[in-house]
Amino acid sequence: MNKKTERCQEALEALSAGCSAIAWETEDGRHLWGRNFDYNRVAADSKVTCFPPGTEFYTRGSGLDGSLDPAARRRAAYGAVGMGTTVLGSTPVLYEGLNEAGLMGGQLYYRGCARYPDAARPGTLPLQPPFLVTLCLAACATVEEAARLLTEQVSLVGEPLLGTVPPLHWMFSDRTGESMVVEPDGDGLHLYRNTVGVMTNSPPYPWHRANLLNYAHLRPLDYGAQDWGGERLEPCFTGTGAAGLPGGWSSPARFVRLAFLRQCAARGRDEAEGAALLFRLLHSAAFPLGAVELTEVEADTGFDREAAPCDYTVYSSVQCAESVRFYWMTYRNTRPRFVELPRLLEHNRILQIPLETAPEFLDVTDRAQ
Image 1 (cartoon, rainbow, N blue to C red):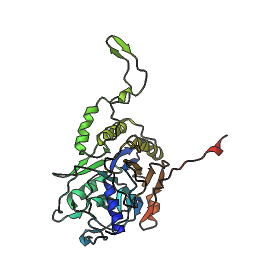
Image 2 (cartoon, rainbow, N blue to C red; image 1 turned 180 degrees about the vertical axis):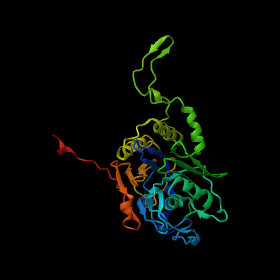
Image 3 (cartoon, rainbow, N blue to C red; image 1 turned 120 degrees about the horizontal axis):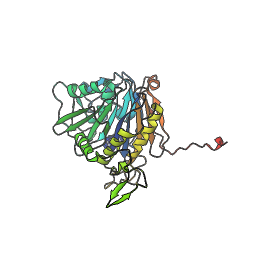
Image 4 (tube, rainbow, N blue to C red; image 1 turned 90 degrees about the vertical axis):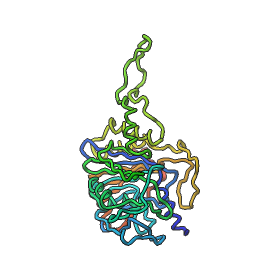
């Protein structure tokens, strides 16, 4: 295996990282979607990536190993931007992103649960899992269109891409506010519409949804004074309404935490405030570096950056369906950046922007009065 192929395989294996995702709506009706990307390194060549309408891509195979399927060649109806990689050459692979029609979404790790058929159904387009986000953003304007595409026109196939079949599931949202979870299980592909607006990792979405019943007592309002054995105890601290809210970084804990916050947290008056507040919610589910130690550390391929013996939130991203802006911040550089898709599409070619992971601080000493 040559160096470039090794780099591509490492990038594809990075798609099997942990994650949390949440759909959001501001007070003025802006629709946002955000996610944490949790892994133990910055995957090779991962950058903010944009492709214009008309971009040629494949849903099966790679030119690097001679596996490209000419019948799986397509052209993008919509331009899109998100975090991803272009190392395959033949197809820009997006981990998450949004398109010019306002469809937003991404892929999350689905360890131990993802199952794919060996072959496509007759008359459908074969689709390898790493290409699902790219295909949906390139071809669909809404969650409804993505649902029809995935159920009627394509078949996920468990064929390795450069030796890897990452276990994935997906979440999408759009300008209507609807959200959808897509999960490939042993009994077929399941689409869950009009969800609670949150997704993390395994177990399947229905398990997470039912698990919320264990936390029906949670509320943003404090509990008042209580009588214990004839003695009345007055509360001396706040936050008792959320007593029992799980605080760990397991997938179930993060799902409950984000579902609770999605119900009660301030939404923001407009896009700018909403995006800032949504980053704060994502921080509540983020992996602090050093808190989630790996039992087995992957070998450094030589194409990684900032590899650590722990999973951590490599970056967080927020997208807006109406402005088609893509915002992001990294673990060490928490100053948000954004790009505007219409301006990127003026270049009419595939573009990439570095993550800029180095710490950055704003010196305001000279503003003292």
